[in-house]
Structures are given as structure tokens and as C-alpha cells.
Image 1: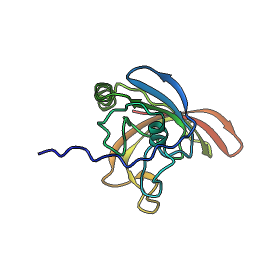
Image 2: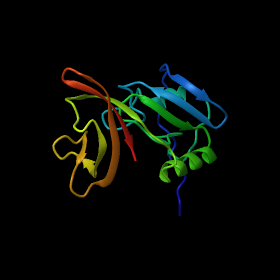
Image 3: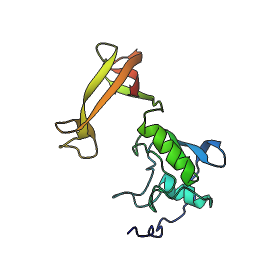
Image 4: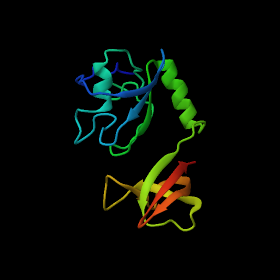
Length: 166
């Protein structure tokens, strides 16, 4: 027996959003660094979801009451594009595309040092870093991951890197 979803306790909050695309089924939001996508321990409000609720429009219910419309997420300190489903059919289709790896993701990162070689593939099991629980690391028992990378520019002590998780 499935219980109906709990009523959302998310308080709508006016937070400026940079919306790059919108139609009847989808929003593409340019999420700034520092903005959590959804409420979590330590971040009960001032999230992208709070801002979306303040827009007063319908969102997919498949993410549950705490994550309405959220198809995927980015870490709080990561900026980038987030897809938000406005209805359940769009959410199902977007989730399918992510699950079947039909989407392409690319990250641009400023990293300390100079990767050698300047282009390659990193592979290993990714999981929570046992010393820094908010970070991910290659750990025994983690989920297998593969990321192609290439250095876009080098600076004294740093490199600008494009990373494409496969």
C-alpha cells in the first residue's frame, strides 16, 4: 500500500533565479554557487526549491514533497544548469534520459596544479570521503565512475579543466 505524499513544508521564498529556458514542461535554471538545490540538513531553506515554490507554478511531484520538479542536482558550491520538470511526464522522460546516459554533462573547474597528462580519463569507485563527509573521493566499495578530462588553460599553480563524466 502506497501512502499519499506528505504535504510539502517548503516555504516559498523570493530568490532571484536566472532562467535560461522555459516551456510548459521544463525549466532550465542557471544555479549559482552557494545555492543548495533542495532542503537538506544544514540547509532547511534558501534553496532553489524554495525559490521555485515562490514562482507559484506547478512542478512535478515525482521528486517528493522536498524535491518537487528536481530531476538532478548540483552540489551547493557548484554553479551550472539544472533541469526542473514542471509535470510528471516530463520528469519521467528526463529521469529516463539521465538513467540511460543519453544526456551529456560537462564541468569547467579551476584546479590546483597541472594535471599530467593534460588530457585523459580518470576511473575509480566514487563514494563519500571518510575524512570529509561532504566531499566525494575514490573509495573502496564506491560506485564505479569514469570521467574524461582535458586542460583548457594553464596558469601559475592552477589549471582550467573541462571534465565530462561518462
